[in-house]
Image (tube, rainbow, N blue to C red; front, side, top):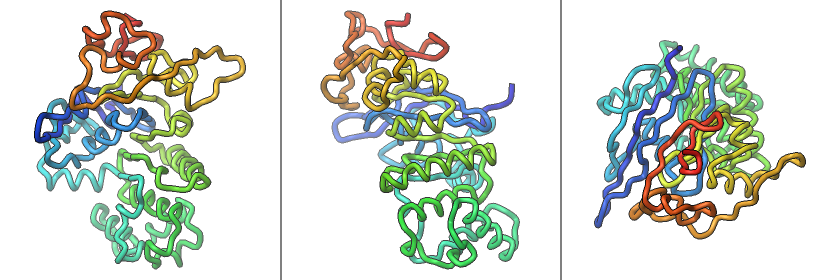
Length: 321
C-alpha cells in the first residue's frame, strides 16, 4: 500500500488556562491518501480548526501538542524545528483560511505576493514566476489575469480574494491543502462557486485536501471520507456517501437530519439534540455525548467508547459494541 499523504496518530492538543487545562483534541487518528478529500465536520468547539492548525504547525502558546504524531508522506513533522516547519508549511502544505484578508497583505499587489511565494519555494526566475502567477490566477477563475495581477487585494471582491488565496495555496505545488472553513466569510451566492472551484481543482490536479467546514452539504459534496468530531474526538468516520445517507452515531444522525433533507425513499430517524455542547474544560465522564444523546444507556456515563469498525466505518458508540 502507498504511504498516506497525511497520517495523524493519537493526536492530542491542550490549552493551559488559569484554572485548568482545556483538552481541545483528545487522541484522534486518521489517514488521507493521495488525491483524497477528508471532510471534517462538527459543531463549534468540536476541534475541527484546531486539528487543521496542529497539522500545519500553528498551535501557539498557551496551546501545545500534548501527544501523538503527524506524518506528511511518511515524514514526521510535529517535532520539526520552527524554521524547518515553516519551509514545510509553505512548500509541501498549502493553506486556505476562511477570511482571505488574513492571508493577503493589503499593502502589496497580489502579483508580488504570488511571485514571492513561488520564488521562495520553486527555482524559477522572476519572469517565469510571474508567468506561473498569471497562469494560476487564470486557473482559479480570475478574469483578465495578466491585468489583475498588478491589483491590490482591496480591489477584489470577497469571492475573488478567496480565489487569489487558493492560487497562493497552489503556488508551490504542495502535497496537501488544508482548507479551514474556506467559504464561511463569503456571501451565500459565492460559496457554491468556491466549493465547485476547489472540487474542480482537486480533480484536475489530483490534489489532497483536509477540508474543514460546518456546512454538511458542502462536506458531503466535496469529500471522499467524512470524519465527524464532537468535543475533541472523532465519533464517526467513513465513506462520504455512507455517512451522509446512512449515519450511525446518534450525533451524526442529528447533524445530518438537521442539515440535509432525507431522500424520498430513505427512512431516516428524526433526532433532536437537547442542550448545548459541554465545556471542554469540564467534559462529561464516559461518553462525552451522553448528556445530549436520545439513546443514552446506563454504561454511557461510566465507560468511554473508542472508535471501532462497524457498518463499513468507524464509530465510537456503545450501541455498536
